[in-house]
Length: 265
Image 1 (spheres, rainbow, N blue to C red):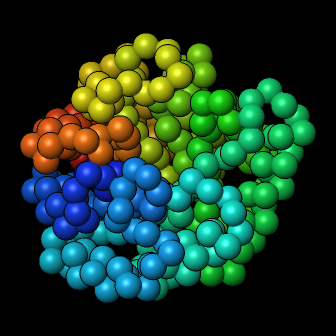
Image 2: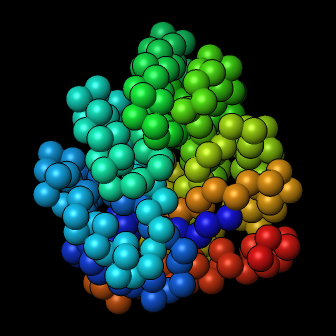
């Protein structure tokens, strides 16, 4: 498994800070945030301007470009994301499911949209991943399985985030085992409690919450998963650089310990 972190943790700081301090913390790679309002890193409206700098930073800091997160399913936005991914050398584009929970019509619309986007991704030679998200049409294991059954494209995969599954009232260790055959990306963070949001950024650090992340990573290892495991901590845009670095380093240490405990490293 490749340990990375989403640059959104450093959303209040420039992109080089994310590369520099994630490399210093020992991460293997980075997932670039293209999330408007949470960061100004990979801004898709001007991706051609920032692409050379991203490639330079990846080389300078020896970080593998593991993925990109862009939540919208808007066709024009997603096409820009795929184009940027090809140019920069990013293999995976993660998006959100959209829609609303427990609404069959909304779920079908989300699945249809993801199917179209997966076909577009395949044309560009990249992989589209989606994760279950609290409040969205795809939000738990049953809805994830429906998407898996309906979308057969090899360019489509599941992005698994234990914090959303935990807040959906499920056991993430059992949930990852149910969908692991199509998992191509993992967003990871901890969560204390079952509230709608994942909590304060420092409480999203691995090891701070209620989720059995060792068990979660062990299942991935048992099934031969070797893809990205990217820390995704949101809400830290107003945090100091020191606070962001502490969260990144603490989480990386926990992730490494989990890999060692289950024999993955």
